[in-house]
Amino acid sequence: MTTQPAFEPDAAAQTAALSGMTVLEDGGGIAAAYAGKLLADLGAEVIKVERLGGDEVRRKPPFPSDAPGPERSGLHLFLDTNKRSLTLDLESAAGRRIFADLARQCGTLITSRQIAEQRELGLDWETLSADAPELNQVTITVFGIGTQREGWRSESLIASLASGISYRIGDPDREPLGLPYDAPQYQGGIHAAIAALLARRATRVSGVGQHAWLSIVDIISNVMAGAGVAPFVFTGQSRGRAGTHMNAFYPWQVTPVKDGYYEVITMVDRQWNRFMELMGDPDWQHDERLQNRWLAFQHADEIDAFWHPWMAERRKAELMELFGENHISFQPVHTIGEVAESEHLKARQFWAEVEHPEFEEPIRLPGAPYKLSESPWAIRRRAPLLGEHTAEVLSEVGVGGSELARLRRSGVV
Picture 1 (tube, rainbow, N blue to C red):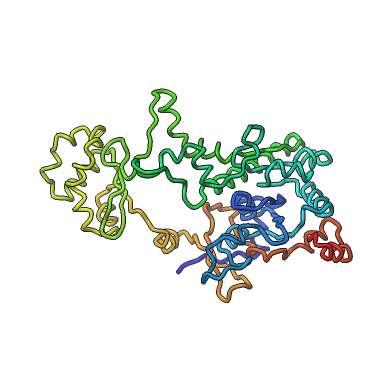
Picture 2: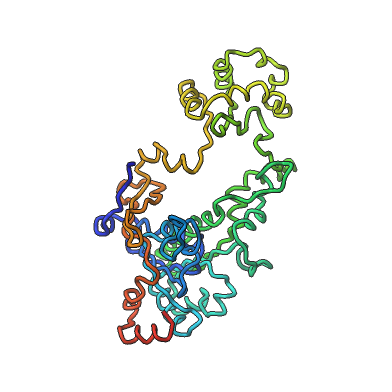
């Protein structure tokens, strides 16, 4: 298996795109952690503030060998690379004072903490920026700030439902489905990282920081459900769930094959005709219901019966080769296991191997989603142990050994 080794810190730091940027990550969960990871992997110094028991991502599966532990969560090992971990009790006055000092020193704060809790703790942007006019804060919430839903707590499923995207997902004769794999949280993280960079750039010009607050529902409504807005606005049409068939031209569907599923979609007549040739130019291709492929979906069940048996006799690999040779843009539906062993990802050197004291062998993690020739993505350090850098980080804001010992005794760090 071809993997990309983790880069050495000194080698990566010399050309990192975000070298010199320092971020305080707070609040826990996937969205804030992914935002921090995206910035850290490009060279930003990211300090992750965790409660004394650890961020919630440390408690989420998968766990190697199904053995849970705060250092063993696959989610934590992926999301927290390149970060330093600081444990801090924000219920204490000393903990809040340290947090405020760190936020002002870092200059960028990314948090998923509820706005009401920020205000209660005195760690909201208005308070923190009073003595730090260049501070930028990004707050990630599901419903945003300044509406009647400001204080609502929810997770990915509710974000999917509230955004309208679930109206399009699933079998039309069954209940709607949510986006899988916490996609709304990851989308929130992506947009939070973008917001942090935009705010930082604006501050360089104006010298004034700002508060950017994100609504994950708004993000999903725009990014994923947005394709349904124009037809509704201009024609009043609102397409519901289509299941395995799209209610558009024919064919546009997910089709069973011998060892899984295949997406079959083409508006290009040349490709459709080559598909017919591969099947031996069957007589049924002249069926009157197929003559207008923009309306043929209305008869999908009857027409499917003509060619689905041909697909069901063949495996994905065979069809991939056959369709590739004939320039037909049908695509196999990959399982997660097939993605993990993908030759394409191996060729991109997508996987990174990282040493970690919790494991005897290097762990394999997803790598860069992009390539930058002059300022490359890099894993400079493994995911931190819980509180591993507490003393180091506190020393940078003037907390010495005796003070640190006192804070530890009192349960602040």
